[in-house]
Length: 264
Image (cartoon, rainbow, N blue to C red; front, top):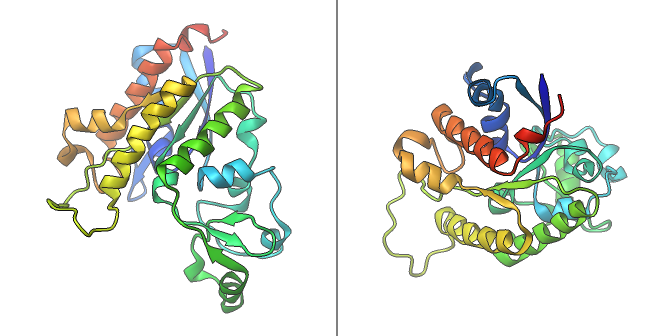
């Protein structure tokens, strides 16, 4: 059996396409190995998955959870402190790394006023009154990343990764189609998610030209197959949509020669 190690750092898009997708507690899609059983029998992917808050937070992380966070029993949901402050992608050996621009597009963070670290306060509505007061008094909101900031952060992350490994880096873009959106004039409007996604997708093309990373073009996959059938909302796909994305990851890994070089 050939074994391939993929490190996937991201949220619902990378997890549900490559690891598994469950709807109502029932398994609806079982990830990349379902594709490989057909296209590359005898090849098995081992996945290491971590959620990701944003590129600026990852760039600052040294792998240590700040004492101000570790000393509290706060609920952070799918973004536990170990993941939010992880340095693992810079220390782990893998055959390929999969990232996504989704966190930089959608995630809002807060900054600790004294220590300067960034935090995603997931599930803060369920915190104790004392912890909610701590969040209010000790943190300040951080503005959303713009395209230039995001791509600069990703460039530094890629440069850091390249110092220790030449393993391929794949980055998901996003489909800008939002079910139900009917906007036809943008004058005077704030940046909608659909517009923001389009701008980040273009930025990712420039990043690929400069650094050589590979884009998993979720936008094109959804457009070709039909967004009405494949998208549930701005960020979630249907199980057939996740299958298409996993098939594209396999195709790109094959083009890069990764699947042919896996030791037996």
